[in-house]
Length: 123
Image 1 (tube, rainbow, N blue to C red):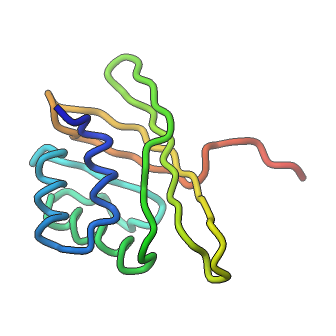
Image 2 (spheres, helix red, strand yellow):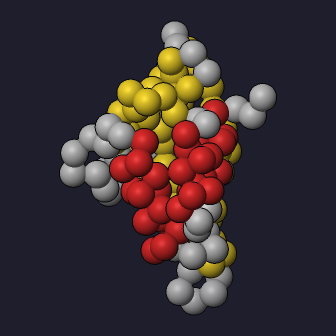
Image 3 (spheres, helix red, strand yellow):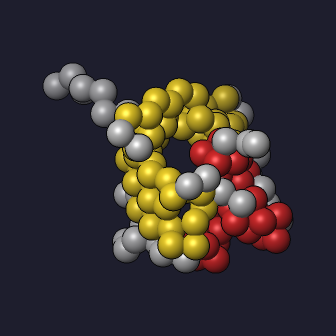
């Protein structure tokens, strides 16, 4: 079976709304709660989540989202995701995000995302 976290982030580069929805439906529970800094309110439906994820491929064509490292403790997975693609100048760029994820059985039920990986910044 494909890991539901990898499967979910694999949907971020799918441009076809139907294919993206199918992939997300195979990854998340009907009771999904998704939040990241770009969501004004939690997303609580699979259809709305698919639409939100579709904004990524629409706004960053050719970019991908891939889990680069993850670990799990007490039923919560911390996943670092690399969002990568060509920038405006044509060079490869990567932005990292960190997600804290809970599952209900084999499906993701709660996904909380943060920009960056929480590394200290220099003043």
